[in-house]
Length: 219
Image (cartoon, rainbow, N blue to C red):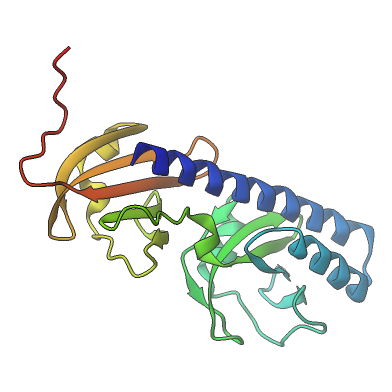
């Protein structure tokens, strides 16, 4: 489980780091030209180089979608009510949203956004790219969580993550650790690790066999 948690942390950090730099590059493009067709093409090339990123979009200060790497011209929609737009406008750095349904596509995506100049630039991410697929353990669950406990991604994708999982005292006190607890109605060992770079927590859980001991050290 510790190996899976480490893999998930490194994988997610690598992708978020690449997105972070890509959004800065997108912001530089906006400063260099006002030609929307040129900006669209540059955004499209940036998105194609990022694994799991379906599109990069630009939202102006009023919340209007002005550039979409997926299509030109973009759909005529206002996104000012979206959490990721509001939060990116209010605070510096990368904001990781929660799974959202596309207003025009109807497809779920994870928004990762950043204020660049006067605008918000956001990556439209397929959530399953962020998490390592653990196929060797039938009773294992992996998840990425925001620090408020809301789900970013999980494996299996349909895994039920308890709403109160972050209420475990040990998770709230430490950078990383493990504990035994009831998880999805099963006695489990739960491990976690906070990211050093971005505001998310990696969670891993595995069902305990009958009679298993946790935390015993005979040395």
